[in-house]
Image (tube, rainbow over all chains, first blue to last red; front, side):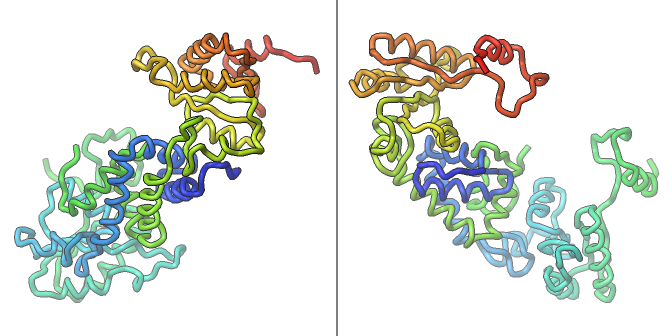
Length: 202
Length: 202
């Protein structure tokens, strides 16, 4: 129950907006608002400016769906990245994760979600047609499908593999197996089975 | 380890600022930034405006320390609130909590923290002098000390009680006891002892 208290409507509005951020509820939004007011010059005003700037300048790349201030994005327009490989991911967060790992130097394609019968997401709601178009270009030789290892992610992977059949590209996917640093005792059966099936010579 | 990825510096800056909010770490700040970009018009731009407005217009009340767009604040300037009682709290969040409970109709005084030898917070760092000044006014008959039931909170409460000795006001504090809806079995010894000591006729 949230009773209207007598703090001003500006603050109320700010708290309401903050509580819509993932990871913040009404209570932590109130704490965040108080923290922000205590540090107006070091966080609050810069955050306001940063939000306005990003809202204004950052947009999805028309080629791959990555978020950037320029279009095509830095990765699409980079000469240093290998244009023969496209890595297909669900979301920009996955692209960031791969970039942090720093071991991939090809291009990306952001689907913008996964197929989901429950949520009513069909192939037309994802950036699949533009992927096919890109895969049809002569320069592209491989498409790595790096959707999440969830049911929806794997369904989407299978659907895309099917659609890419006539594109004359090699379609690969990320390996399943024991996470680096992981202990067998704590792993689920599915991962262990996958790791056993894909065993490699030492 | 946070490797610089190739997403733009504007986004980087936004994520860095978001991750300074209480309750958000680097990962949830990234998630929040993506969420914000997906909902530019419904959250991102309004949030930017709300932050700027609150930074501009919301300030501590010069009388009681409450945050408001006007000075003195709505509570201090309200004719409906009982001016004979002052409730002393540590922080504006505590004031909001009491206002949500809706059972207090007096005025407030926000200390802005607690005495803490460890953190080097002394009496001069809190709004104690202004409290004494307010308590010395003829209209005030009671000061309720509602600091938290922590060691620092109770130390502060004792210090303030001492300072208020010559002010001709009744100094009271919140009751300690069993929380409404609480089960005895789960309560700590201190609370149970306090509840027993302060038992009242049925």
